Image (cartoon, rainbow, N blue to C red; front, top):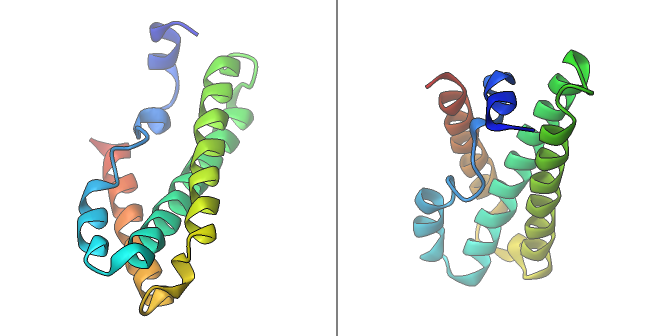
Length: 119
C-alpha cells in the first residue's frame, strides 16, 4: 500500500510500536526485573488489543482495499504478543501487586490510545 493508501485508511493505524513504553517503563523499573516485565505484559496486551480492534474495523470496512495495511498491523500485533509472552516467561506475575500494577498501566495505555486516535 502506498503512503497515500495508508493515509486514506481510518486514523486507527496511527499508534506506533515503541511509542508507549517510556513513561510506564521508568517507574516499573524501580520495582526490579519483575516490575519491568509486568509493565511489558500490561503494555503489550493493551497494544495487541488495540491492534485487534484496528484489524476488525478494517476487515469490516474493506479488507481488499486495506490488505497491505492489515498485514502490517497483524505483524505488529504478533510482535507485541511475543513480547507479552516473554514478559510472562520472565516472572512478570511475581511483581509486587501484579494485578493492581497491570490494571493501572493498562488504564494509562487506554488513555494514550484514545488520545492518539484523536490528535
